[in-house]
Length: 236
Image 1 (cartoon, rainbow, N blue to C red):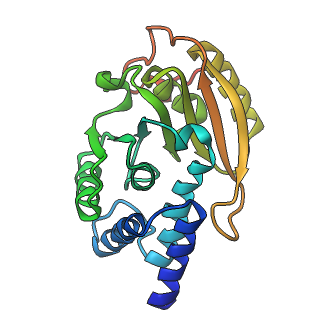
Image 2 (cartoon, rainbow, N blue to C red):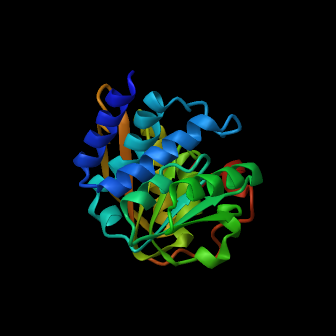
């Protein structure tokens, strides 16, 4: 793909969500840093693929009003920085916390933030279960390819304010997992609002946003100590 073609695709993506030329430049810087860093914690580094797999897939969250209007957002298990970093670029008035437990990945995300000059994003190098500062403090929590859904719900619920929204990026729907998630949600004070099929880029298949609202305070016993949610998921 030529440079002009790649630029054209990025411009079209920004146009889809009403982003400015400055925001487009920030997203281009993210793609460039991802491609240049051989230590990047992602198997998708080529800008042609990363434009779809990382940026477009992240920005599809903007289809949800709760995301577009959030003042505070936390990305759990941020990994290489997605979807949280792309959303931070798109939402300059939103404070975005990129929560990641692995120091190597935290260092990489810090470099990405610096390269793209994303002033409203910060790295929280901690496990989600141990991030006490974030308890009840977020309008929106997002997660992409983090863990089984009941586990994601347990991580996210304590971090949301009452009335806040969890958006869990998932692929093909799984009825058994969704049933377990429903039981976990009831225990954690969450309510499923919708499971939205999305098409972040041409040819995308089986992409869904699972959207939950926090309707009751999460019991103080959650989250359980680090590692327990994965070993003994709620609802399973």
